[in-house]
Every structure is written in structure tokens, then in C-alpha cells.
Image (cartoon, rainbow, N blue to C red):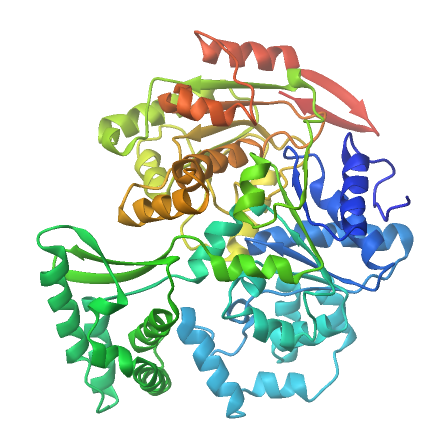
Length: 615
């Protein structure tokens, strides 16, 4: 079988991977692919899918959990086009909010933006949309689009046209579409998106990058909440537009539920039957009226968000909830909160069966049978590939002297972690990355660092800022990066050419136990025969750590050390999971062992006229 593969030769296991995927597609089955970071899963999956799709007149969707990961697929397609002169038409598309150049609405947040955009377009009041609809796509826009959504945004801004509309029109003519998980996983988005780009899943192969993220991402699209504070904000919005809608009744409902259900507890479950029957009978109409009022408020005050639209979304979610959505009431000070928490995204998982076939791939998709069950893909082919990289090029240790366990967190512990990172940094010649379980812990440790940290990931960083941070770090030769596990810098990013010489994983990014986690565990226990704790809590946390640890070794020539800085990694519960992915080395003095590893690895290699240092 000849595959459209951009390199001269495949890496170890890539050829086998392409054949395995193609064989599954040939018999109409999905595939679950687990292969270590750096194996070349993206190239293999795209090449195999293209070989089958273009013989059978099918489309391909390449979906990622983060916008920053789109560039990997674009580079693969560019390489194939350059090598074969294939002229493959592809489109990179992200959400409307990210691609919007209309300053009248692009500063509006969340669901308020989408409702405002829709209203503006329907009324014919968006000049950028109208201009895009009324003219052809220029060569400049087409050229920019080949470099991804950020380049298209810049070109569209310069031409004064809606970048999202241009991307959607290009997608209609493309057989390869790069998009975000939300475009397909969100039940609120899927149908409208597919209709907009004139494609369907039935005739498509869907490649899911970083597939271990699917369930968490899908769950987030189905969750919603309101609070007494958000209701108070909404009442102020109503007053500012002189609306006759009265939300005082809703505040009364929350206070009454608090007294009846909490009874001194911090949180408790609620069901729709705990809501007043009159409210539930009319909730659809009420939600519609509140949404209209929210749009009026945004338009009148030029606000960046509306609590009214937020409340309307919650009401719509309340109408559509089923047993896989838990209702939780909680109290923080005087603020009462009603949350709809997704226990298992039934509505999202259903999309997998719509596609001709799915390719789920990740460096941390173990145990494969667990993910096959969670995805409802028990009939899928399951493939696990060994690491193609020399074992001697990596050492991994556990620092048992510190812990990020919630009960252990203190100024003294943060200082110990900072000192530990500093000791490792002192012996590292080259770039080093440190990944934390949360932004809060990152900030807490950072303030006690005695060494310079020039590259720091911040919460809510836009994709352009993330790309610049990543670019600046890659250009560095001896600096340190601070990021978070599960974030855009710790998953799906290619740190090529041995950019990172060492990685420190601080803590285990486990979800903090609460009522929502308890409900999720119990739900999965029933659905998957007692596997709730493993599926909902242990595996997802450790996988985030392993994903971050895998950023250093990207080729057979890369050398790096990994330090898991938390004594719990040495506990049997966690070690039994992590050993599926990483071999842990034993040493009474891991600092000394790292120093020796780096001394042994120091070499100067002349390759193709360029000097490459491994330190």
C-alpha cells in the first residue's frame, strides 16, 4: 500500500500504524491508537485516512481539544502537498468568537457573543459578514488560509471581511477540515456547523487528536450553573433597560431550596422536581424572554457579557437534562449556586456512531479497553505501539520529599518545591520545563523561586499569546518554562530538536473530591461495572501528568530527564497506572543520577553541516 507520507521513510511503528488504520477503515471499523509521544501519530493517521478517503470519495475531519494543536495537522498537509504536488484542499476553522473582527461584538464573552452575533447577522447589521457574503474569496485570503486560522484572521481583518464566514465557505469545498472538538462534540453546535459547511459525518472519517481529552471536553459543553449573585447582576441589567421581567421570584426559589435541601451542609443534590412546578411548566418561554432581554442589554450598554443570557442558557439546560446530568446546590458565603454537572456525555458520544469511522489517537490512551467502553466503541480495533526511542536516552525519577496533596499545601511546602526545582535547574544545561497541577499552584511556587523563569503560561491566555510564548521558548537555549498540566503547552505540542532537556512534573492533577465527583464515580460504577473510581478519578489525573512528561522526547536522538515531584507517585495506586507509560529509575540521589546522565550524554554531533548539542 502506498501512503501519501511526507517524509522519505517512516519511523519505527509508523508504517505498521498506517497499515493497521487503513485495514480498520477498509472494513468500516474505528481504531484506538496508543503510541508514545513523538512516534508520529498525526502523520500516520492523516496519511492512512487520506489513502482510504480519496479512493472512496470521503471527507476527513481532524479534531483537537485546543486551537494551538491545529498547526500540527497543517504542517503535515503542507508537507504532503509539497512532496506530491497533491493540491489537497483543507480548511482550518475555529469558533466564531476567535475569528470575529467586528468590534461591535468581538469583545463580548461566552454564550453572550454567539447570541449577539446571530442577532446582528440576521438583522443584516454586520458589514463584515455582508461583505464576505457578497464577494468571492480573494487569492490573498486563500493563501493566508493555507497557514491556519490566525493567518486567515489577519488577512480577513485587512480586507474587512468576516473570517469565520470565509472559513466556512472554504470548508464547503474542502475534503479535509481541521476544527475543534466542540464543532462535533457539542450537541448545541454539531448540527448547525455541519449544515453550514455542507458536510455530514456519515461520509467522513474523524480523527480525534489527544483522544484522552474527549470525555472531559464533551462534558464541559453540557454543563451550566446560576447563582444568587448572577441573578442580582441580571436584575440590574433588567433595570437598566426598563424591562418588566421580574427575577425576584428566581432568587426566592434559590433561597428556599437552600433552606430545604442544604440544612447546614456545603452542597447537596437537587432534581427538577425540587423546582416549583409553575416555573418548570413555563420555563421554555421564560428562558426565551430572558435571552431577548439580555441581547437588548448588551446592545444598549455595549457590555462584554450578560448574566441574563447566562441564566437563559441554564434554564434551557434544565429542560433538557437527563440522568447523566447531576443537579447540585451549594453555598459559598451568602452565594447560592445551582449547577448542572455532566456525569457522562451521552449526547456527545452518540456522534461517534454517526461517522463512517473514527481514529482515536493519543500517547496516553491506556487502558485501551477502558476508552473503547467509554467511547461506546467496543468493536473498534485497539492498537498499542512501543516507544521507538532508545531507553538510554531518558531517565525518570520520583522525588518523594514533597507533596502537592491538598492537605499538605502550605507556604513551607511551596518553598520546598521551589527549592527542589532550583536544585534541578542548577545542573541543567539547556531548556527546562516545569508543569503544575493548576495555575494557583504555579503562582504559589513561582513567588518563592530564586532562579529566573522567563516563560510563564497564564490563565485564559489567547491562542496568539500561547503561540508567541511557545515560539520564544523554543528559540531559547538555556531558560525555564512554567506551565500547567492539561493545558495548551503540555499536550499536543511538538517541542522538536531536543528543545527541552528536562521536565519536572509537580504534583498529580487530580480533581478535588466533591459531590460532583462522587456522583460521577457512582454513575460510572453502574454503567461500567464498578470502574467508577478508576475511570473518573485515578486514570484521568495520572494521564495529564504523563502527557506533560512526554513533551521532552520527540525523536530517537532526543535526550532528557523527567522528575515526578510528589511522593504519591511512589504509592502503589498511582505507580501501577504510570508504569504503563514511563519506566521509573531507582536512585537514592536522583540529582546526582541526573548529573551523571547529562555528563554521559554530552556529545557534539555534526549532521548535515549543523552542530547539535545534547546536554
